[in-house]
Image (cartoon, rainbow, N blue to C red; front, side):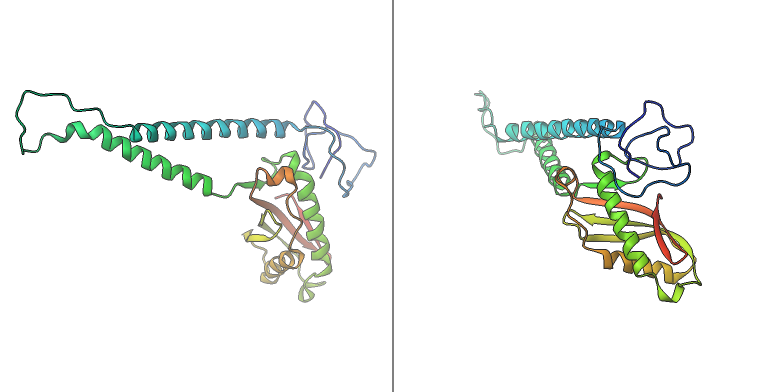
Length: 239
């Protein structure tokens, strides 16, 4: 769920997951609101996440600096040979003197390939309780509401009033809102519910594109939820 304020102390027994900790609040003794609330403060998780991203950027800069240094050394002109009183010979000399240059070229090539592969990889974020950050909370809450509405509307006819169960599924979205991958991590006891869950995601897609604050940092967003098929309704809860 989403909350609009944060408490200094963490609750002793948390019942829900939110974008920041809140000990108590609200007048309803049971249940909780489903509508999203505006974000009004920076969560502690967001601060930690930003620190990790800053450290990642520093490591990437250091890697690029090392690559530039190696490439500049490789491109530098070779030292002029020193004059020698010895006569020229056709015999091959020891190749130990060539090893530093060979090793330097190999290091530069390997590091260059590593940087290319690193830059080409998609930036992926997993949205789960231990890694949730405030920029993702409202988008994922909207995704959940859309899934539940679609799932309730298209509840499998063969299961109505007869079959119930739960499954855990991870849905990976691209930045444009299209579905990249669907993985059932823990299937339901009835195959028809597993098939229905996949079909519900396909019916609900495409989802809204990532907001700018998410798209800047993430190419793929993986959302893990436990799907509850019960009383002819679908509810997507915490993993």
